Image (tube, rainbow, N blue to C red; front, side, top):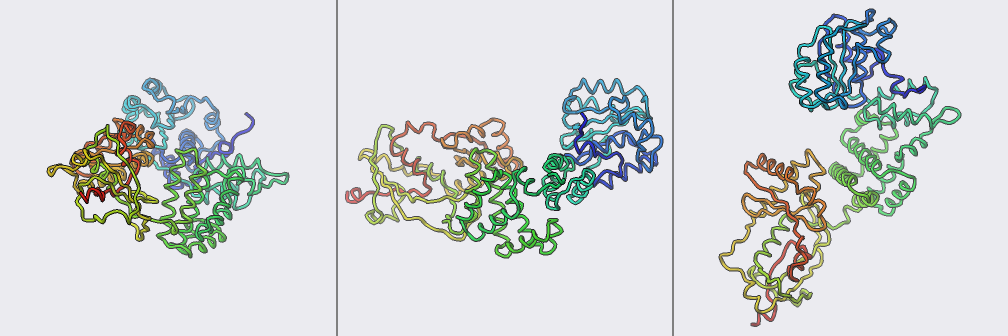
Length: 585
């Protein structure tokens, strides 16, 4: 191919050209200068930070007879031959596609032959964490005591997946993420060489999208330079249109309307952004990043400019908005946005989720907030256990105004009518306690049972009923489980929270899912996941607790009318009272 990608064309050829890894390059140069070359090296770090590039430079430098201060000269016959593909002394192996024990055995057979061009034979194994367990075991002895002419350089993005026995045999170097300022500086050099002009805002945008990776930034730059006009200029608006991201002024306007509780303005801004082709996930990322900028400005004041590496205009915008919000409000808004963003991965209605998330922030103070109760399912199960209902019976259901019902506040929990308070909105179960509570208008549902069932409906004195502590223990165990699972797998924790916990006895926790959440039930109800849940509870509570995942509504159509009503009402506080006729009798 006549055209090379920018990250290949401008790949560093000496240690001095490597960006952002000064301490590591100095160590490697000194090892070459003082002939202290090790037999095995491990370069680890995020993608696009120079792991493979430094491995190639090191392989060339230790074989170059005319090295300059630890750098290869890139002019001698050895350097020129190594630069050409197919040289026998520098063997590059892709660990992802050559991960079996047979490939490692082949290395062991060939490593004994001396180099043909330089002084050392160098094996560069990229993505070494992809090797199988057997391949690692086959590599151990060779890696520990290779021939004098052999050097191993391993590169990986996930060193935690490499066995400790491999790590202990290597000199390990952690390649750091490249600072944004250095990426911008390198891009400016490249654009000057290519005679392409871009604004500071464009360079900052590309470096931010690159996420501290030089290769990712140069790959994006490689696409963007083709947006240049006849004079070689790349307009920032064209860059935004290409990437599907919103400009900072639009994000500022949106956040300002959220803070001022202008719901109509919020929807208008969102409609304009979506109509211009902005991506919903990227929009949420930008909102979270912008709110982070406001939060840091609120806490760090003038130091925020250095932390955020933002322009003066951006800092002034952050400062203006930070004056209207408290730290607690900002923290809560960012947390809510992160939670809502996690939902986007599993939904095809991303636009609606984004609208509802931002409207929730906008109308947060105007929405009624209810104190969450942790006993929903436990109380429903308690009522069902107190009322054995004949499946063949059919009860009459009617709604009665509150003023017509008898005042039976002190009646015991053993009558034949149900009293239910309906809630207009339910906050998340694990949300922190709220200070205000807005109660909805009280409504009551009366269920009349046939006379022959009134006697049977009264529980016996020795009937066992779940205690309040048992209900609280079930919720406490479930919260511990969700929190611990969320630390390693937020998606799995989100699916788990769709269920309702019931501690059926001291050592058995059941998690019930309704028909609407059947997909979450199918995901969670796997033996290996349940075993992991039990292990987490044992580690955190010190008590062996068995876990069962159940689908609560799978026999819904077979239930009688009273039981169906109980489940449809889905209420937390249920009392059993007598009708006026029963009181007269």
